[in-house]
Amino acid sequence: MNEELFRLLLALIAGILLGIEREYQNKFAGIRTITLISVGSALFTMLSIHIGAPENPDRIASNILTGIGFIGAGVIFKNDINLNGLTTAATIWVAAAMGMAMGSGHFVLGFATLAIALTALIFLKLIQNKLNSLHQVRVYKFSFQVDKLQLSELEAEFRDHGISFRKLKEFRSVNNSICVYELSGRVAILEKLNEKLMSQNLIDSFNY
Image (cartoon, rainbow, N blue to C red; front, side, top):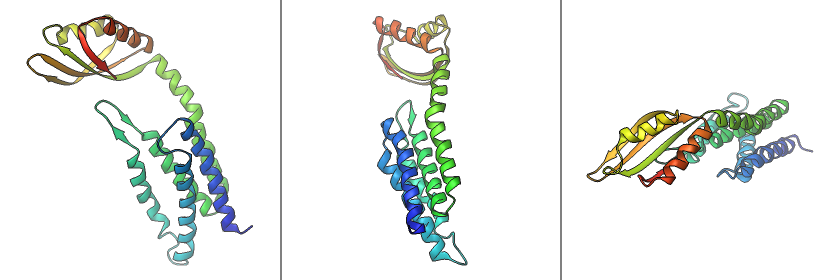
């Protein structure tokens, strides 16, 4: 088999394996996106070696990271209280590096990167979930009527549950108040707070 086709094939296999994990997690950049990034990076690297040889074999490859930065930024999005997509953006970055390794003939290095990336995405997530069950930081957005509830009363609820808190934002009108808090504590305790808030009529709505 032609050496360069073999490199593309390995980039394809590595991209598929890495993309399967993102697809399983139902992420925006799934198996097709990650695979195309891996194969595309491999091809650009090979073309860079050929077109730039012998003086500048890296003149195309050196710009891959710039292009990948735009794709990575496209999967990161922020709503009022949360930031999502950072892990997927990092996976895209690793997929590009993996493809470059395959394209430049560093197969062992490329598959070692694949193994490390899958370990981080799959096995480290188990550790992350365990840690989150012990202690979790959530950003809550509360909405309530000021004639029914005061912030001091809401904060007293946090203290009664043994939850650490920090007020981030507050928006107040004549009759209503919207406030954003960062709460931290055990998941079981945070869930008890959720149940109590839902059982009361003092809070109009909350989300995290």
